[in-house]
Amino acid sequence: MSANIEVIYGSSGNAFTQISNGAPFDLYFSADIIYPLKLKEAGLTLTDPKLYAIGRMVLWSASLDVSNGLSVLADKSNIKIATANPEHAPYGQRALEVLKFFRLYEKVEKQLIFGENISQAAQFCLT
Image (tube, rainbow, N blue to C red; front, side, top):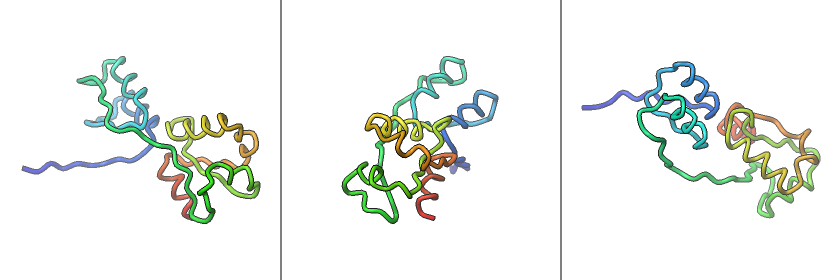
């Protein structure tokens, strides 16, 4: 017996909104446990959400040496910084929290570009 599985990629927040509005998903893998907990509260899940992974924030560049961490952002005013859209992508939210924690947000705010999700932000870096 085999199963036909169709995988749909996107931000956790967008998928949450679709499921909340009746989208027929059987499984939902979210980058933030808050979204599945809200679905449970709304009576839209059959079971309690389960933690399946712990994510890590990564500073990555196809063209810059990032081995010294976030200091590369403070030293470069002419670069673009891609992240997932914080309005609906948990990794975008966490990225802004990191920038604010290290007091870099105001310095780099105008350099930020947002992808729909973390995959699109990575694609921005590659191109």
